[in-house]
Length: 283
Image (cartoon, rainbow, N blue to C red; front, side):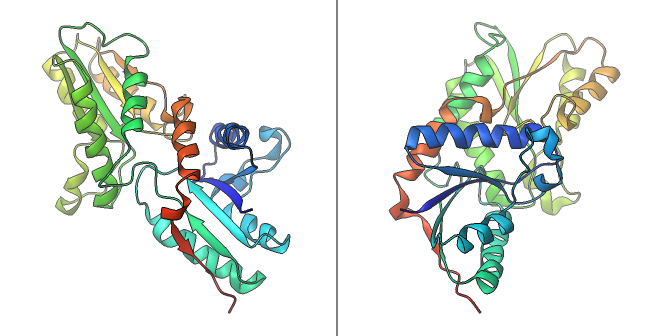
């Protein structure tokens, strides 16, 4: 029986690790097998007393612990929307280092949450539910919404947001205009594929009409430094609202808070024959 790992990128905010643990516990219960919550980086800097006394575990120490305990067949389920370099580079490089130190083992890596070109329609369902959860857009004659993600220097990651955005627009009322933006991006024309910055787009929409609310569809998993109550997204909204009094920006729930995410993760466990296999060999 393989050993399962649910892995996110990691955050220095305890809310992110606590949500990862909640998802792993729910997935364990649904799958009938233990799933270990592990972050690739960062979370080991969170004081343990903010995590119920249990320190967070990052990838390299987790792999080393499992291999030394005799677990030779490991399965990693990534909490990533698209093909991040964390999955294509960091995970195999880390696995190779651990194999060199601790001995050979096999590692299966599931696809990201929205693998293109097939995509993941259930993510569209989650985004739609979250966007409509407060009822702000339902029945409106003119609605304005923005699908926003972190932003990435990798076109293939941005393509995931485009795929989701196109299908989310199809689900919305015709009168609801859905635009897309990034929280942050690198400067220069080479990164224009990201689209506009959220702050710039909100400013433009406010100039068009500061009395009509804008709802953010949050393509974020957990309430960390970016999407948390005092995170970067809310800071951006406050700055725009300060420049455009009267503009109301409503923020949808996060993808990681929706029960449908576990359905996607559970389905991944039944698709293992289609996953990428890494077999790090000790050097």
